Amino acid sequence: MYLHPGIIRDVFVQAVYSLSDNKLRTVLSILGIAVGIAAVMAVGSVIQSAREYIFAEFQTYGLKTIWIYRDWGDDNENKVVRQGSGIDNDDFEVIQHGCCSAVQRASPVVYSQKYTVTVNNGNDFYDAPVEGVGLDYLNINNDNILVGRNFSRNDIEHRKEVALIGLKAAEELFGKNSSYLNKSFRLYKRKYTVIGVLANKKREIIAQLGIDNYDINGRVLIPYTVYQSILGSKDVHTLQAEAVSMDKTHEASKQLEDLLQRSHGGRYNYTTETMDGWINQAKTYLRNISLAGLFVASVSLLVGGMGIMNIMSTSVIERTREIGVRKAIGAQNHDILFQFLMEATYVSTIGGFIGLLLGIVAVYVVSMVSEYDLNPSWSMGFVAIVVSMLVGIVSGFYPAYRAAKLRPVDALRFE
Amino acid sequence: MIELQDVSKTYHLGEVRVPALKHVSLKVERGDFVAIMGPSGSGKSTLMNIIGCLDAADEGRYLLAGFPVSLATHSELAELRNRHIGFIFQSFNLIPRINALRNVEMPMIYAGVNPETRRKRALTALAIVGLRGREHHTAAQLSGGQQQRVAIARAIVNNPDVIIADEPTGALDSQTSQEIMQLFAQLNAGGKTIVMVTHEVDIARHARRVIQVKDGQIFNIRYQ
Image (cartoon, rainbow over all chains, first blue to last red):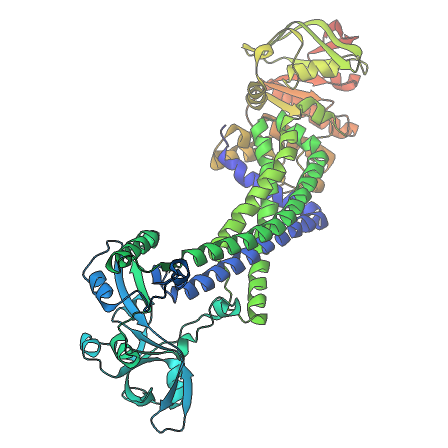
């Protein structure tokens, strides 16, 4: 099949004329498609924004993170009470020396309960979650230092009483807009010097869904060796590790668990957690919303498509004679098919662009009234335009095919 | 140019078989001007449609400029109409909304002629039919006679061998009809073969031969 280049322009001009012949009908069909495309655009953009939000929040844990800790239920099985967390500094050292191929880095996490942190002046106090951590903790957790520095090897080895604190904690302790570095506060009878302030992390959706209410920006981090000396124990409560890649998290978990089983003679059971579960859950959740949105959009596109099929069928009937004349002067069937397909696609694509604009407006309106900052997804816009063209082609096909198949004698005889 | 051998055509209206042409044979030489006459239902339209490659015969052979039309596919028929035949209709049948120039360009668009040549040839054709200066008028802005001139320009623009005219003056007053017939005579003098269906004796008089059709058969051919 060969289309003459002149036909494209001819068809375009024809389409404009024939569509402007019946403006109301054309406008209604265009609107039908526009509503469907606006729905595609709005739903797609909201889902895209939601996906970005949720994954940005997941990033605050590190997507390759593995947590491993003792399964405290193991006592019940064995009917013996075992002391300790089942993880100690020696385990961490073994990991540091490259025991586990799927593990990139690791940090001990030592904690016990919430401590009341008191500022030096003794008047202001504040309940903070306190954790004892290692050098790589910030790296694993995708934490950024706003001012100051990370712990040094020296801080950890010599149990320096230094701290990294969240920005919110800093503001609580020392007030807003002050300088926080080298200020000190009291924690469990000792005095700590602030060596760094951590940037705030966003976990709004996670908190709203009740997944994790940990006061991330209010935390106080100290060297794990210091915390162990406060608690008088060599226990590491959780080992947080980072796998070499996202698809190696299970392998890394297995390696860590094997290591701990070996080094503690199989006396403890361990639990490992990765982000996989959450990521999959979020994906399922987003997919379900997408499907619901897609359904709504498909229904409106279906209605819009039927509108186009209707105007094209009417147009073919009204122009039967014209089709006959075109065939008499040499139009091939595919020329006629193409002409009506183009016309249908033209209507639906105009509808697509209008729908795109409506969708973008809808996204901004939702963005303004909701607390979330939503953005139109341009890839979704591209999809919307392609979909609108497809709707035109699909719904225009049957009328166009009928026009193409008309016998010239019959078409010319048509009154 | 046109050679029909034993051509038959039967229409099926439900269960009823309506024979429209019964074993018709006809030869039209290059440069001839033939009028086909006959009462309605005589089969003259069917004959014209078959000659114009708009419809296919059920039986018999049809050669157009040596090409076996009776064996042609739909696509080949379209190409034959495009290259070898120019149609002129009673009701002019210009494409509405687009101007005279674009109407005349239409057969060349389907023939794949490039835009510059197309425009040049369309302007020439419009000049031949005496419509210089009316190129940008649409059908609605032209009189009946002028519309038929545009249609004639469209019919001749691809330089076809045969012009087929179906009651070309049926919708025109006698003064305009005469003008159109003069144009036909001019085209015929220029070597175009013309096959014209008419029921007006005055119009048929312009042809070289008058073929009388009745009950699906040619019953008289008169030279004049």
